[in-house]
Image 1 (cartoon, rainbow, N blue to C red):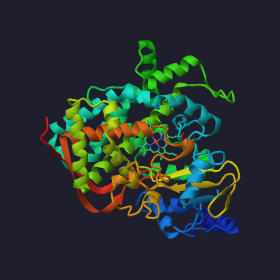
Image 2: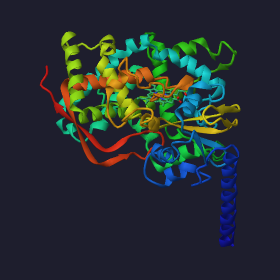
Image 3: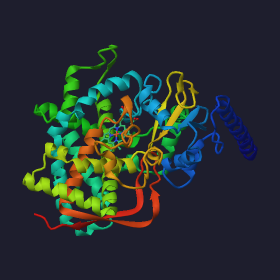
Image 4: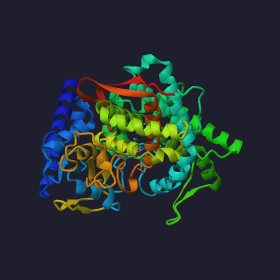
Length: 496
Ligand code: HEM
């Protein structure tokens, strides 16, 4: 009997796979768009779940196969999905046609409180929360938080000097710890005695760990939000209680102390005093519950730790491979340290022109986020290929592969900071390490500041050497581009 049920289940599944797959193929063919016929139902997500490699690498295989197409249809169960290839189409989706593409393409299920963060939110709620969180990232706010980031970068140098065993083999973890301290200090006002002793670091690591469970949840969220809702698949549930409790305490403490630190907790106190978050244009209101505020804080924590650590690692890795460029940036850093007697301020960092070219080029060649998703909310047309896109269609845009396409950046494998020189003719038009348009990364300027502070202090006291440990590989991750098989070694410099 059981065998018969299994057999019937199997046959029904096979028929469904056949019918859905053929339907997906017909859908795109009818619109004159090529369809990727391998895994017609689950597209690249199946390969990602069952094989090695980061998700962006699986999309990369499609990019290489269809690089002359404006876009290619892919399986995403019953939702039409497009892998957008031509950079002009990518720009249209991310930036040009916000009215049609303002949805992220993922959303949390009911009761997944921490999924109510800016990345997952959509529509009116996203707009109000984004408006209310933006003041945290203005140039003035960043300037007033800089001393905290700078202190963490100095602690990082002390830590490295005291722990010579970390000079080889542990670069990435050390950078993650610095990023965690900087984010906790500057955004949440949480300062632990030692920057290397924080319960938040483990949580940030756990939430984005590329475990099968996390990868599966992410794939399901992309493939079928309906299935996620039916089975109540939640992304952040495990850490909800600890995090809401911790952030609530931070906000309540700040309210009691009645001091201004210009950080996230200040903004939360201000928002809660106002009673509601309101969109002045539409009157739409959202209650700033501790859960909703914690959701923002947690996402800032996730974004400020691993992606920024990847960006710093990539910068050091490229410098370690390019001794001439390293010598030039060392010179700029040394000059500034000497000129300002070792006191590096926000203004001093902002003036380091060569450093900023290096950071931009590191993010060009190694964008920490490889692919960006959106969902169409009203019928529209992509300009290249005149592709009709219906409401509901999901899109995936290949940041990594556009940044490394010789048609966009000549000789993309060469690390050349001069691409970002003021008079450079190279196109910044399709530069998108932080995305593009109204849903662009809210923390982009903050992230670059944290990168800059870390790089400047480390390079003042150390030089770096890159050790290739085998053929290039990337961590099996759903959004990140984290290089494996490569290490950065720290070698002390003889400076004060
Ligand atoms: C080097 C580090 C970082 C990189 C490469 C990065 C990259 C990105 C990218 C590619 C997106 C999607 C943009 C789009 O859809 O067009 C994004 C969104 C976002 N990022 Fe970042 N990010 C970084 C650091 C940060 C930090 C430090 C924060 C906050 C403290 C942050 C907060 C956010 C938020 C809230 C969103 C969602 C924005 C929205 O949908 O409105 N990110 N980031």
